[in-house]
Length: 251
Image 1 (tube, rainbow, N blue to C red):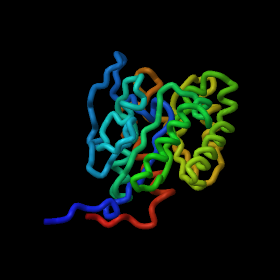
Image 2: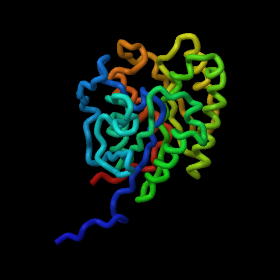
Image 3: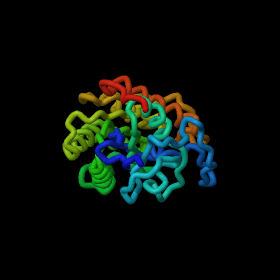
Image 4: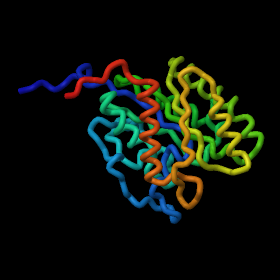
């Protein structure tokens, strides 16, 4: 009889933090009547190699909607996380997703000392306790900072601080950050926030552009199809810029 595999023999989880606001937590397939249609594209199907850290800090099989128990006051649907994970798992092995995004949140709510920030850091720290390595933070936020000129003008400084604080608090000074430049928001200051996002000039920070991806009729949230494409874009950015030195052997 075979002995059970020890923890030491188990594949090391490659952990990705998913953070930001509603387009990261996912509204794909959520109707205007606040109901998720339940449609899961093939690119977002569950896989035994993809896990998620639940709100109760347990590793569970990952499935849509990834943020249901995190962005719990809103109806969640398809986000970019599962299509991202399905794309990178063939290169990195077991993927551990740590959902942290909450809809309608401004960057100042992600400042060190604020609840959302401290919860994200605590979840990230917990994620490595059973073994694993935090590979990157995926960040899609900024729509809430397009409403007022002051917030838009302060965005770059706030984002710089956020990145430096996360890296310091996790003890990962080179933690890769993949940021999504927003595709929607209040037209008055949307371009100012996008400009700030592209101006972030810190090592190991990559910005990809969501502009042009299809939006739902609310002109704010990405469609399910757009979320699948965004997941692939995030995966491409991750594998191109921060690929592991060699792919894990296939079983």
